[in-house]
Length: 202
Length: 261
Image (cartoon, rainbow over all chains, first blue to last red; front, side, top):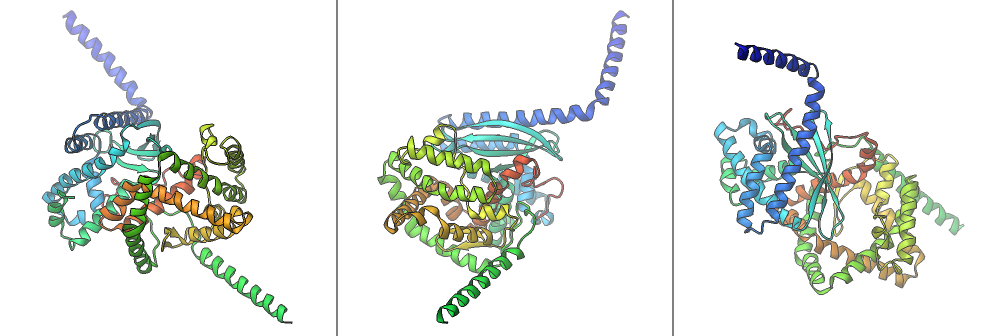
């Protein structure tokens, strides 16, 4: 009986607390997203640094990059956006096949470039809410080069905070991949199945 | 009488040239374009020049830059880079003033003074070490500040990606470079040779980036065009971004309309 009483009281307290939380929700949710986005990029950067400095073989590093990309980026959304209008006509199985192929392709492509980061570091400077997403601003310090800016666009529209674009000194990954995937499709006469098959070797 | 004629003809030619240039520029004046917005009416010609540039890079520039990178020791490369940067400073300062950017004009003047003295005539970049990093600019940026629109994209033989506005800027910078104008012709040639070496050094330093664009992408022309335009808009927009007027100029929303092009 006292136990029940205790529970009820706690239940009441919780109900009150959640009511208060609800009243303050818009502001709190926004603050949380900026912090979460910042945390996501901090973690991504820490993992990238760990992979780069792991001393593993290149193919092992590519596998690690792919895991990282799948965990921290909204891969299905990025892949669909890179595919452009073709995604509209694609079947479900084509889309999932493309997403899987794209994930490997991106990990190898950017993984190759991350080698230049060996001995360097990325520092998160700032994060702010812009319209429907959070922009995290970081600076990359590479050996023998002047520091440059890397921006991460983070959204929680997929259910949790994931990044959907990286902008290096103004150069936009989504825009770049749209151009690249578009050109690859053109080379294959618009044949998406052929592109999916070929992407493993790209 | 004859002289009168010549000067008239020259004046007419000048006015015509100015009208043509301003007409071309005015035609393309407008707001800052979206990140993947591309204005490329001369694509066929541009692609031909791109093929030429790519061939030149593969056969000559790339291998020479690689040779330069291997043969010249690191300190030598750095001195060439520092010296070439210093030679650009007088022109940068003139452009800063034309842009009414007194802060950068002061910084660049201080950089020039520091590197000429403590940097032993420009051999060392003492200014950057002292916390006065390089703030390069050009007449293309001055035109941007003056409100001239970007204009159509251009890929020029030898020099590569540009726009009508930036190409105009490059021509003006070349013609009015204070260092070339002040130096006797032999020294001016030496200064230009040094700048060329500095470009080779950059080609070697950024070899993997350059090669991934030129040789690993499905359409190297489209990729180079996109990267040039985005990066140039980023450079020019930095003052905007600092003022907070254009916070999400490079935002693409893949959630709002995932199929949008």
